Length: 373
Image (spheres, helix red, strand yellow):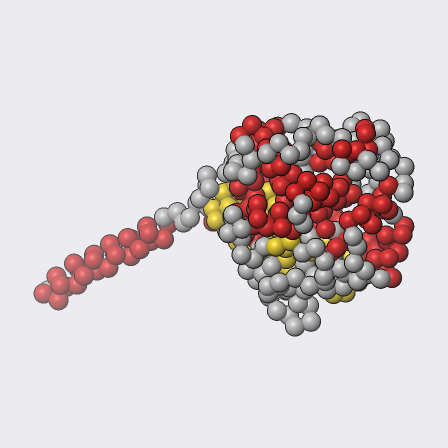
């Protein structure tokens, strides 16, 4: 009887303990984990179902309390080395936002006006009286894109290490007639940003890389970001870049082209965390006066398609501002929304196919994070 009397309290204590453990297990985990799991699955699906070798995705949503960065796939198809969230990569046309920001700082300083005609700086170019700085910045100038010039394409194929001068590139574009009357339509044209870079150099008397470094990179303390005027390599540990199928090139193209062919339109390299710091400052403010910042975020936009528009070297997609880019071996997307307090940075080490660009993954992330909106 004594032994039974002793066991009953012990069994009761064990039951209470098990019940307590069960309740603890049933307690909710991190409410953001379902979002993260779905975004991770979307990334893994890109690696498992497309030719993309590797990717890095960063999502920071301060309202939800999400700060997530994820690497999937490989950075080197030969060695099988995994992607690394700290790798540098070419940010391609995201560079246009750097060039545009320096341009607008010069507008703030009274050295350039958005209404200035191109002829004020380069009167030798055809139709320069009818093309304004605004038209160059929001892609409504009608100037031909040098990417579509046969001579440029042939040189890239046959002499990929050719070092291009900005004037050489622009001359190719102006050898073609205007695509439309300036200011009447939208056409994304890399030549526009080359001209903005040339205007910056003329007005400041400095190289474009000097102005970008002194006005943006150093003030933000970006230690792994830089502008390269020429050369085929770029600093810092980085994964290999693959395939630019549009020109018939396959395989590893990491150091196969001189970056001078993209210059003001695509020559910056960075890391996901440093791009996060940059795009948040770009959208939240700090580079420009309040009035010009408001103008940049709300004026001079041209519609690219029904849901995306393009302003002063800046793309807008619903409440998100930023850009995307494609260059030899690397593609990326960079967006920030003040309204949602959310930043998304994505890059792949594969520059084709076009149907698999990071903007598609960005759209999936938005649908995961904001399903009913």
